[in-house]
Image (cartoon, rainbow, N blue to C red; front, side):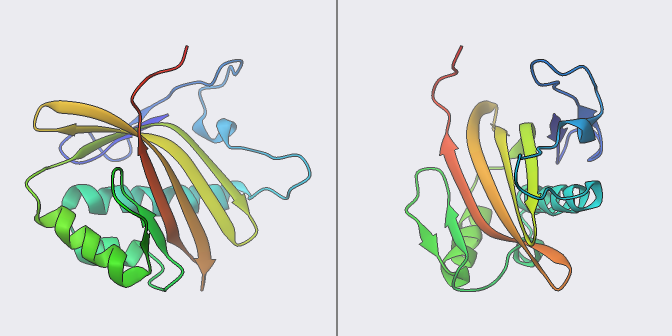
Length: 168
């Protein structure tokens, strides 16, 4: 599945990538179910995906207040931007976003290969960030971990690793 943000088509336009062996084009049909673990219902998955979408929309808009609202602002928050050291705690993470937003790049994300999982009060989203910036494109494999606090999904960890080669 892919979602394009920023200057592209509508935030809700879908480019469906059907996983191998699947026949449905319904994006909800591809949510993960783990044997032996309780899985989130469709509304939980939708809510986590919306929180994930808000994170990328804030990134593209370079909006620190919206970005701040997506994160759990505690010492247990962790962020690893591609090529950066581990940032621990909201103070370091917030400073990193200030630096990124003050930079010259203007990233546009096309999200693909997204999979969302919910177990209780925790959720994780794995995806590929296909970035377009000043005519260049590159891809990052990312994991976003969310916790539910007071009924809202907040980002607690973001980890991005550059994709240098494709398998297969």
